[in-house]
Image (cartoon, rainbow, N blue to C red; front, side):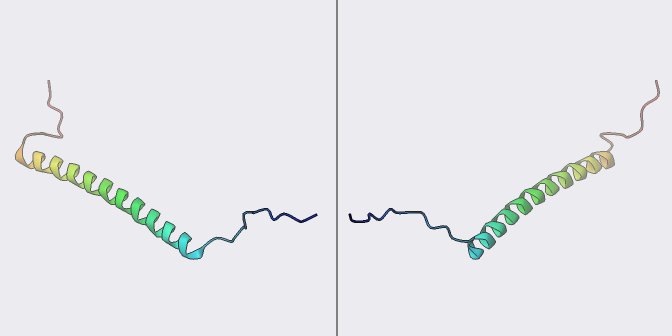
Amino acid sequence: MAAHKIAHATLKGPSVVKEICIGITLGLLAGGLWKMHHWNEQRKTRAFYDMLDKGEISVVVPEE
């Protein structure tokens, strides 16, 4: 009887270069999202103080 060869998946260890590339990509993506959030909060704060300086809004509750 002839032995038949069966193709098995060979298990390899983690690819260091691939892991580093994935880590850098995820880090840059998360950093970009955080920076966009920070810029949005800055814009809202700046708009609030601009309206406060123009007198359009007030932080003092008017007496009734």
